[in-house]
Amino acid sequence: MIKRTLYFGNPAYLRCHNEQLKIEIPTTDDSQNGRSTTIPIEDIGVVILDNPQVTITHHLMHRLLENNCAFITTDDRHMPAGLMLNLEGNTLQQERFEAQVEASLPLKKQLWSQTIEYKIRNQAAVLKLRGVKNENMLYWADSVKSGDSENHEARAAAFYWQNIFPADFLFLRDPEGAFPNNLLNYGYAVLRAITARSLVGSGLLPTLGIHHANRYNAYCLADDIMEPYRPYVDKTVLAIVDKTPHIAELTKELKAQLLTIPVVDVIVNGQSSPLMIAMQQTTASLARCFLGEIRKISYPEI
Image (cartoon, rainbow, N blue to C red; front, side):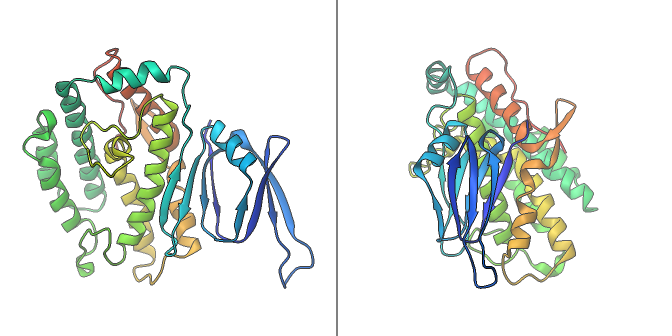
C-alpha cells in the first residue's frame, strides 16, 4: 500500500490518539477556534517538519517509527537537514546485516555497475524526452564495467547536466549553487529519505554502502541505491522549471509539487507502481543479492 507523505510548514501540535496521528492547529488572529484532524498512523510513510513551532509528542514519534515512518527535519533555510529512522525495521534483520557486512568486493562492484548502468539509461531517457540526442549516453551505459572502473558515471553526468536545462540557464550542478539547484536538493532529500526507509524495512544498514564510503555519511547505501531514481526527481524539477523559469525562492507550493515524488509512477520489471512501492521492490531485491539468492537488483526504467 502506498504510504502518505505529510508536510508541516505551519505551527501545529502533533500527538497520538487511538492509533491515529492527531493534528491540532492552534487558534490564530483570523480564527476564534483552532482546527484538528486525524490520520491513521499505518498510512504514513514520511513526515517533514518545517516549522520551529511544530510540537510532536514522544509517544507519537515512537508509534510512527514503529510503523517504519521516516522523519525529516529542516534547517533555517527550510532545507532538509536531519533524518530519523526505525532501528528495527525487519524481523530477519540480524541475518541480513550479516550478509550485507560479509558481501564480497566483486559482488559489490557488480551491484554498483548495475546501479550506474540503470542511472545512465534513465538519464538518457530524460534527455530523449527533452529532445536531446542521447546516443553517447546509451554507449556509456552499455560500456559500464565491474565497479564502473572507467568512471562512465562522471562522463554521463557531465553531458547530462550540460544539456538537460535550457541553454540560457547556464546551469552548473552544485549543491550550494543557485536555482534550480535548490529544487534538485529538496527533491533528492525526499528521495533519500524514501530510500533509507525502504532499506531499513528490508533489514539492511543504510550506512554500509556498496560504493559510497564517506566516513561522515550515515546513509552511504541510501546514496548508492537512489542513483537510478534521481532522474525521476529531475523530471519533476524540469516540469516546474518549464512552467515557472524564474523562481526566487522555494515556496510551499513548489515543495508540494516536489512532495509528489513518492507517488510518481515508475516501471520495475515491466510493472508500473508508485515510486515508494518500487523502492521497496528495489531494496528487497538488494537484500536477496546479499543473501546470494539472486544476482540482479530490480531497478526502475524510464
